[in-house]
Image 1 (cartoon, rainbow, N blue to C red):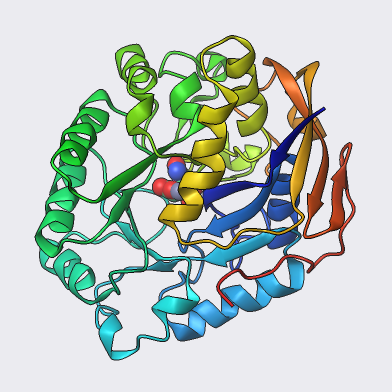
Image 2 (image 1 turned 90 degrees about the horizontal axis):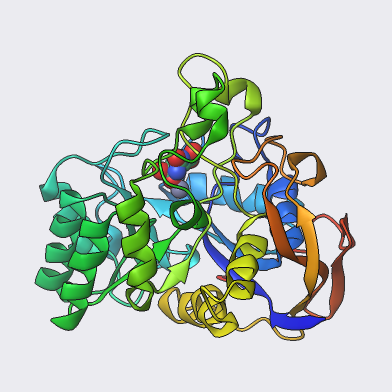
Length: 356
Ligand code: NCD
Ligand code: ZN
C-alpha cells in the first residue's frame, strides 16, 4: 500500500443549492473521498449563484448538513458585489473569489473589464482570486494581476498558448498560478468515442477539449502547472445526451487513478502529483493542514473505470472503460475512517468548513 496525504481539489461543482438531481453535497463529497480527496473548494455557479452573505449562508448551511469531506465555498464575482472592502468579513469566510470571464454553464459571466478592475481593487490581496479566462481573456487577467500586484490563479488551462503565456508571466515575476484538469491532460478533441457514436453532448466541456498539440504542450510544460484540479462538473446522462447538452465532466473519482497510471508509465512522478494536489493548492489557497489524514492506495491494482461503481449522482464518465492502475482503498480524515473499498464510513455532515 502506498500512503499519501489527503488530496485537495480546488475546483469542484457540488450543484447545491438548486440542482441536486445532478449532485448534492453528500454525493459530491462521497465521490471526493472515493477519489482520495479530503478537501474540496466548491464553485459558486449554483442556483441561486453564491455571491453575497445571504447566498453564502445558504450554501454553507447545506454543506454543513451534508458534506462528508472538508470544504470551503467560493463567492462569485458579479456586476454589483464589487465593494468587498466595505465588508472585509465576507471574503474571509469564502474559499476565494471566482470570476467567470468566458462563457460557460451558469449566469455569472462578467464582460466589462471595468468590473474586473473593481474586483481586483477591492478583494483582499491575501485571499485568492480564481478566474475562468481562456486565451486572450487570460492574458488580460494576467495584466490585471500585474497592475494591482496581487496573485491570480487561472482555472483549467487547456491550450499551448495559455501555458506559454503563463510561463513567460512567471518568468517576469507576475504572481500567477494555474491548474490543469485531468481531462485536458488525457483527452484531446478526437478522443471521446461516445461523440462519434451519436452522443456529442458527452464531449461538451468548457474549456473545450483541445488539439493533440495543446495536450502535448501541457505535458511538456508541467513545471509551469501548479495544481491538478478536476473541475468536477456533473450533469446527468439524460442532460448530456439531450438537446442543448450542458458542458462539464465529472472527475473526482477518476483523477487519482489516471494520474497514478501515468506515474506507473513513467510520465509523472508521485512527487509531481503530490506537489500539485497537496502542497501547491494548500499554499495558493491558504488552506490548513488536515491532521491525521491520509489515503491508502493499492498502486498495483489494475481495474477498469466504470461509472456504475461511482458515488457521483451524474451516472457517467468520459473515461468509461479505461484501464487504470492504482486503486484508493482507505481514506482516514481527521482520525476517522472515512472510506474503505467503495463504502463511505463517516456520518453525513462530518466534513468541516476549513474557513470557519
Ligand atoms: C462547469 C459546470 O458545469 O458548472 N462546466 C464545465 O464545462 N467546466 C462550469 C465551468 O467550470 O466552467
Ligand atoms: Zn468549473
